[in-house]
Length: 266
Image (cartoon, rainbow, N blue to C red; front, top):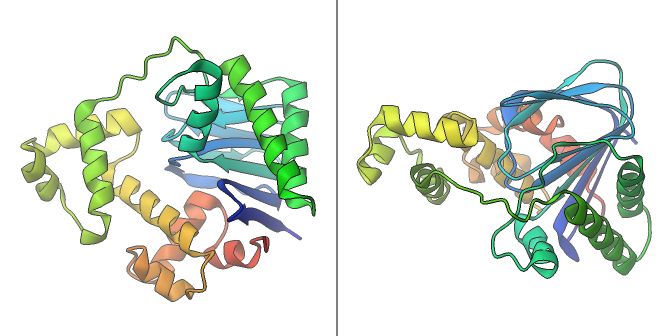
């Protein structure tokens, strides 16, 4: 099978996507979850806002939430694992380790550690196999504890731009309302120039791209329901199914139908 997806109501904090053949995604996008990626064979570039990292076997890429990125496949590559973990769940794990209140970002994007790479592949393969939920959950927790213990900077102070965070919250609350820059400007008493500048600086995405990104993530959640893809497109705020297909594939490197067809039945 070319694609396989693990998603279960019993482990709602995790989602794994596996692709036999690695596909690039040319549109820069973010996830509001933690993203961990690895490949078995080949060579890809993960392009971030301020650098490009080369991902090949025996390395993993760790993206903290809201890290803008896209992927360029350099050679034919196979065995693509992309694991998403809920930020709040990860913060709870960190709190047990460090007694922190807010999520502590992992300090390295590219982790070159063969032991951690092997552990990650083991966890991913376990999620895709027939095994107990207890075994799956225990393996994820053990892996993430090891990762956080090694690579979290507990002295890190995550300073967010207050205006950018407020704009982001407003967008999320009103994403179905076709809001404009004028709406945001009136809401916060800020100029359109300032809004565009601070948002791009904080999240490394234009506002319109961020909105499309959030709509695509909403559609991904709905694809595990019994709704038709046409209904999901409209429910997520897209003009039609074609609009959804285009945006979804640019972000997730897979069509909504492929995603829906390959969800594991857990």
